[in-house]
Length: 548
Image (cartoon, rainbow, N blue to C red):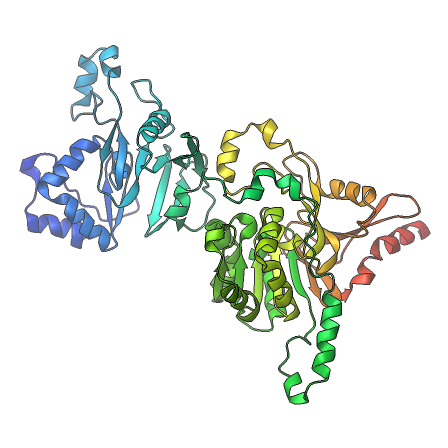
């Protein structure tokens, strides 16, 4: 239907096998795509080995030919596969067999694990969501095989889904909007098998080794009882203005020739805090980050601790910067074995970038890790040097003195897909927002996703008001809608709308009534306004309404 030129290679019977030269031309030299059928994989693999087609496929794959197929034509590319090749009707004359055997005879067979071509080092389970004619579910039988041989990684492929592999990277594609692929792995500690569906919304593939590790929980000890860290003081930038003033005073005492080279005298901090991670893909918000950096193609350091250093989050958050041609480096510190030396980390955070972009995710986990390894103090130093500090969601709230967070949400974890797969709706909704301390560059409580409702059923904005009224230490709140950003330059700020509708909000307590007052920030301002004036907006608006 597409109009593609198609050739067919029949080697099931000996009398149709072409000469070695002709077969090489057909398999290695001619095609852009090799498509293998479903059916009896064991029969196919035996024939390919007998006629040397397996090695020609290897050569073709190394040349960049796309290798594809469904069912048997999917599993054949893996190192092993879960197969129904021993099913009595998995034959050429299937219709005859179905006609001759009884229902009991047709059901009397077992799945088997067999070796395959080995392009992908895992066991493939096609028809993962299906039940065989023997009454056994593919997924459950594959789990049993995994328990007996824990060395095997497993990729299950639902009917109407596909796994796309490009080099060492992979992604799942849903053909019907529902089906996907799954990863199964054994837990050494318990001997149990855990699994996770592979998300189908990724726009780019991620490393296969990371996909195979998708069900595994993060190893940081604090994650076992994250609630204990809610009251931890993470503020390191509350003396930012004082230290900056001292730095400027020192600069003014230096020789004038050296003063021009000092970045400490620049207007800082420079912050762009987006209500959600999508803000990092919206042009009005990204333009402000580039503008604050002072260069056309800023060097961007990505820190994905809050998202447990997952590559899918890295690709999403940095997409626009990569498309612009920006140089990007990635600092992974969620796990101890990826933390660089103190010297290397300082070079990455303080000396190299124009922009530091932090991911969304679990803010409390990120703040704990940054404090443990000293990254928080390096961020402070980078902020004083004039680096743009930005991010969405957790990557927005971390720059404030406190934030409203869903860090205790049960699926706010590295292996989110596994947790979503295992817990009931009731369990997934059984959590509360909490207020935690943050780095302290902006003296206010940030509420990312201000206009959104959590999986616990509660509006962010409403819960933030409760905290404001119940906790006297919370004097001011900045709510940032999804697709909006709060931009800070020194003591001046503005709201940026990424979609023309979203904005930021300021919420303060009304001392006269004991209630909360709020006001949206205009997004059509051409210049920034003092932060202290922003905090007066709700009262001004209330007085204006009263006078009317």
